[in-house]
Image 1 (cartoon, rainbow, N blue to C red):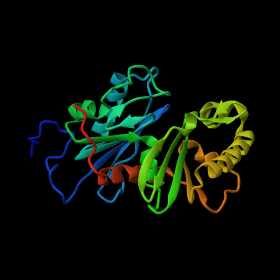
Image 2 (image 1 turned 90 degrees about the horizontal axis):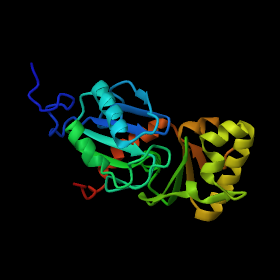
Image 3 (image 1 turned 90 degrees about the vertical axis):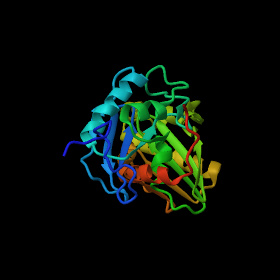
Length: 253
């Protein structure tokens, strides 16, 4: 039977509460990934990935997301993790992408392109939503192209930009723990800096638990304190579901 929906990548049962499929998109400095999840966060499709374009402007990134969406269809809603400051679907910073992001209304732009409801949050925030227990003070950092961070107090999230805070010898956490630093310093030196960062963050935030995610968390070889653990990309995907459990943000027009 031919679909009667305006946009073929969205299922015609988009208003059904019985089966809500979520397209989870993760925008990174080196790659943009997506897959569709069922209501429990279980992947329905394979995880698709396209390299992040050089000088990644909003137009270029949206074009990639549209390709990924077609490969992962159908779905009823979209969750996006973005590497920068996001408020109510509006982008404020994108340090590891291209120009044109400041003030860009990514949620409304994607709603028009994908013809589906969209929620956008910082990528570390999304990772944290899928990782934290919801009890006490929980800090999440992500180690990838850059360094992301968010703190949760009894499950309520507060976005941080700790990655750009001074850390070691006048350099920031991102300078010392980002992708460039890993390649330049090597894994052994980088791991020593990770250990130093964990100690500094413990004194700064007095957290109950610290979760370390992101693509480079797999390179951590040091022994972690009992209240610190690494988390996988799976938690980030589950965060895409949890994002829809939060109160609806004020929609940008």
